[in-house]
Length: 435
Image (cartoon, rainbow, N blue to C red):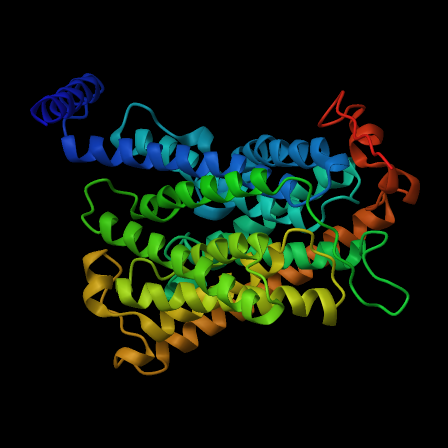
């Protein structure tokens, strides 16, 4: 134990010397810088989690296509967010960052952290539109979502915009990141249409199982792990003592989300479905993302559990009622539970937790705060929904009328890997059947 403490002190000493050489002698500031960059790395690693979940929940013949889209999300997103996305969101361009000042050095770290979030919003869309989207079409719309749709919402809420001025609270992005990605995914999947064979002649959905549930499970664990940086990093300060509370709330909501989804689907269909349980964990994580800094651990259990139940019924609603084919359940996990988590702030926020994390003196409806905060949260949910739906529709409609949104039937049936990328995800692997 002494060796570990000594090692930590040694690292901090080196950090202090390094920053002092750049005119920075504040150890607390140095810790904040290290924390935000570690968190950025954790959020970036969530891209791998999304790639695993989406490829695992889809068919083997589209694995390369899914992986390429997740890779290009971050590549294209980084460029457009550097050129204009960050400027739209915060009113400051990366080209103006001054490395000779303390504030300028902080701006570089802040850009990286925010870029990781922007990449997540675009990645959500790829899962809902998997297995039938043209690759060039995907490249076109992912840049627009990251650079414009997401960044404008970020300006409203995190960049001092009109929703921020009204007191809207979305601590780590249930609305800014997840609802934007979820609602854009809904419009894209609806315009794209269902996969061939998804519905029978009577309009009843047929199951199209994913090819690799272990891969999806790995992705779920990676996302759960990365979410500690997603929510904990949103303190933007390693010296903020509320980090432990925020990460605890995050973990509890994920756990009850998984449990609630498992028991709900078990009671509904007679089996504890693994894929729905995984989505339940993710639903709990999405739901707690907005309120994680303003609610108690007990309330986090409730928020996550409600999210787990919601995702089961939402998947069924989009699949059977609206006939929107979402191979991974992205709309239900991110859109529906992003909205639920944002509204939960207005219901369950408690001042002692909000004050501890620096979010101000705020109470939700169930803690004596009346309906004011809930009204503000509802306004934000509706406004972001309207903005995302309208702008996403225009983007997808334009792409559909120009370069085309969907691959041809023969390509879809054969698989996008061969036709779009000239390779297979599992080369030299053959399945032999015996009679």
